Length: 334
Image (cartoon, rainbow, N blue to C red; front, side):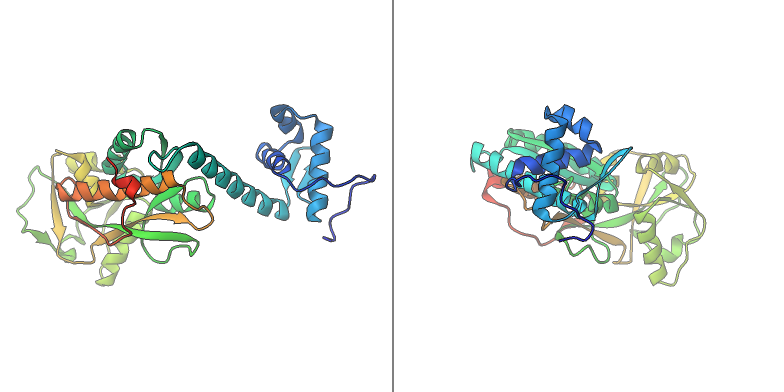
C-alpha cells in the first residue's frame, strides 16, 4: 500500500471499481471542487466523498489532495484521470457505432488543422462532411503544429494535421499527406523580372516578412544548410497580415504554397525556389492511446481525398500527394 495513503477512519465495505465512481472522480478533478461536483452531479456531498474514499481504498493510494481552496489530483490521480478520459472516449465510440451503422457513420469528430492550411482545407472539409456524412458532427480546432501535438497528447482532438519536421513524439502515429513548396511572395508593383525560379542566395539580403514560430525556424534552417544567414526579418504573429504587408511593399515573404493558393487574386507575385529542400511535409496524425472511431476514420480519409482533389485541379499549387494508407469504403461512399 502507498505509504502516503491511509484508509478512511471508520469501517466500511469497499464498493466495486465501477464507471460511476470514475465519472464522479473525473468531474471533481475538472471542477476542482467536491461541492461543485456534488451540485452538478446531483449527488449529496457526503455520498460523493464516500465514493472517492472507496475509490482510493480500491486503488490503495491517495487520488485527491484536499485543501481550503478545493481539491487537486495527486500524481496517481493525474494518471487515473488520463485513463478516465480514454475509457469515456471508448465508450462514446461504442455508443456511436452501435446506434449508427457502418453505412452511415455517426458521432462527434474533432480535427486540428494548422493555421497555414486552414484557409485552403477547412471549408471544403466542412462542406464535404456535411454532404457525405450528415450524421457526423465535425469540429475544427485551428492551432500551430506544435499546439496540435499538445491537443493530440491530451486527447482533446481525434485527428490532427501536423508539419512533419524532425522527430515526432513516438506516441503520435503520422501518415504522410502532402508535400508542398515554399514560395517567395513579392509585391507586383514595380517588381523586377525574375526567372521561373529563384535561388536562396538571391534573397538572403532582401527584407523578409516571416510568420513567427515554426515557419520562421524552418526557413532559417534551410538557409543555414547553404551556410546562409537571413538579413533583415520582420516577424509577424499571424499569417493573415503577411499578404497585406507584402502588397504594401514592406517586404517580401516566404510562405507555404497552400496558404498562397487559398488567397486567390492578390497584388503579389509568387516565385518558386530552385532548391529542392524549400518544401515541407504535412502528415495526418492520431495517437495510439485514442483509437479512431469509424466516424474519425471516415473524416481522416476524406481529408486525403479533398487534398488530392485540390492538388489535381490546380487549386493547391506547387504541392503533391504523399504515399499513405488507402481510403476506407466509408470515405469513398458518395
